[in-house]
Length: 74
Length: 250
Image 1 (cartoon, chains in turn cyan, orange):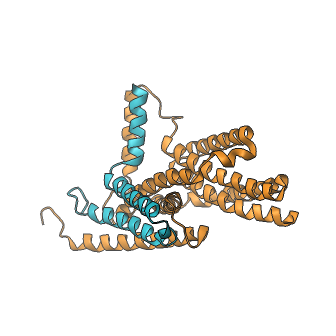
Image 2 (cartoon, chains in turn cyan, red; image 1 turned 90 degrees about the vertical axis):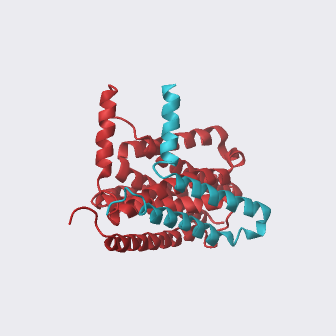
Image 3 (tube, one colour; image 1 turned 60 degrees about the horizontal axis):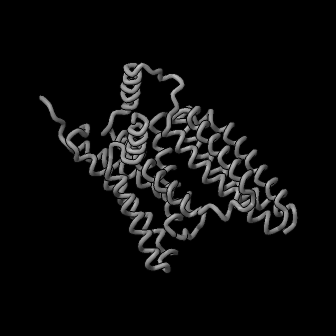
């Protein structure tokens, strides 16, 4: 049981850490991109910039939102 | 394809993959400790060697490289973003520079309370990151050797090219790790976060079927754009923090 909880905790810390919006945002971007390319394979050569911009938006959104948290240093 | 051309082609193609693996192993070793990073690398090399010994040339038929790209890419993207977020917040003054020291002290105290020793403990995060990167890049090298070598009917020469690339990249890594260790901690974590995010984006993109226009040349382009964005975020946060009035008695 200890090893099971340790294993679960390791992957939780690795993937979620102290910012769940990162994992959720990345999962959303990857899921939407994958489904879009499966539905419309002709998108594959032009999907790169959109994929990059979506991940960049996740990064910027998470970092800028961090400043609004009450425990952020002033 | 002539013998020399075959050796050079496999050497260059494998060299690119070895450099990608080295970048991540160096980054992990410098920031989280060499023992765990090198253990992860060694474990991946052993798994690869066993797979090649058992399956040989037919290995390429059994492994879906796209699936591996996706798994490793997603993990590195998430992990890299977490590091980069913290590094940006530290650089902007919104997070303490040495909060890891407090975390480390807390972990050591917890371990002591549990009757274990922190010395000799493996950092599983560093192990997993180094293991996955080495396994993925190593598999790509195996595929390169098989595809170039088998199609030319000269597997030995293709292996020679990949071996020469491995020695060159390893030598570069040995030369680079000492000067890199002198870089300030948060600057190093900033760079590591950027690198993991960049490689993660590239591999996850390949895993979901994105066709990168520049191929591997897209990696430095992504790195540059992410670095620019991270730098801009630090400037924005610093400016906003300066504009917010400080709390407490005047």
